[in-house]
Length: 289
Image (cartoon, rainbow, N blue to C red; front, side, top):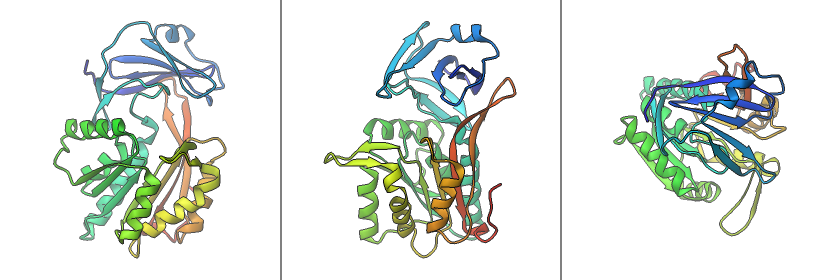
């Protein structure tokens, strides 16, 4: 199954109906408090995901589709698989951030620099591939061996198999600390941390308690020539202004911030998280867009 494209077909009633290539998927969306335009369309989805209290859940397939299945989006090739958390391997709300990252890499390249970029919590590689395609050297880090394998498959399918990407299966925080101790520095850092997690030794990670320290460590890893920084999040309470203030406390100048959203076929955009972005090229201009 290989069909191009992603589309948000409808949203409402706490759900979203999406087309990923040839598959139509019905998933939860806490932000979709309005009514769907076409409730009957949801009943025609190929698969519906229901989440339980733990955040995991089950897929109910009405029509079988192969896994993995493939699609093209944002000029990249994606291998998709449905997992226990309701994800399929791509976050379309990040598309505008991928364009911004590519622009920052192009800016550095225009100045004669091949930027070194660190993508922590890299998942299936959207930001990594956007930077690599624009000409950066990227270090992609994720604790999930499966996610890193899929990210490499996405790179190969997108014609980036030979791109200068280091693929690292490791706890992001442990790897970051080691890079700092080794003296390795990066021009750009991409950070999309989870709300909650556990490390290899059972240590608890909670974003609201450790976000500022994590950003400060990322700043240390950027050394004396920082070029850009991107922080995104889907955690409740982490609004654009919260992310902007966190980044602004660590990086000089004023970052921009905003809401990530997916444009819908019905004309309504679906809020899907927040971002804060800092660029050395506009560090003094400040303000939210």
